[in-house]
Length: 295
Image 1 (tube, one colour):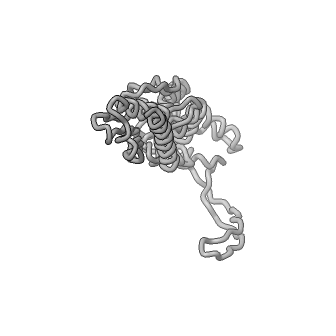
Image 2 (image 1 turned 45 degrees about the horizontal axis):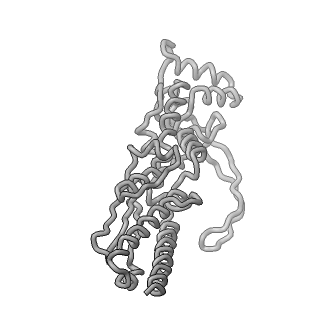
């Protein structure tokens, strides 16, 4: 699991200004700190921590989820389409004998072996340059490829009525994405495949909701996009704020969603925090100037 992503707004750059405020204006400093912390999460231009946290919108998130699922699981309908287009004589008949319960040849193991079957073929490797700078000319090489003509076949390990969630989880990398090129499971039920995709898609926005939970912990009122707010109760985030010491006020926000550090740019986060710190300094400078003029 990747580490959490944290952001902190403090008065580190403003300590020299604090003594210039009378006690009655200490609250103003805290209010400005809270205001900038809210804007750090989401401002009127829909920027902030939410904007640098994927996905950009619900459609993008659902699309990514669907692509990942389709890299792990293949439906029986898709397999039959591949068999029909393969040109392999008797392929569909043979597969149906292996996969149909009650058939004398029924065997999930044989069905998987049939779909995973490989055949040697001669392929042309294009010229390329090695990391050391050496130029390699094109050459021919014998490789094993799918007997049915689809490179996504060759690694099927399971047959099941519905997608195996643990298999999906195992296929994800440290960024939470699926990069594998070959299917791992044949799913027999189209309805259950669609239901699984729908269920997983409901989690889109969970990482954004992590900032919502953090804001809640720090007593910040921040609105979230609808697809993120519906995941708020399941989100993982921590936040806290302190105003007891006028010279050491701070707001800390941490998104503890798994894979957050792999998906949220630390550079972009640091820039946002720095920008908000400068906004606090600018506002406090303005107020100090007004106090000096009124004195």
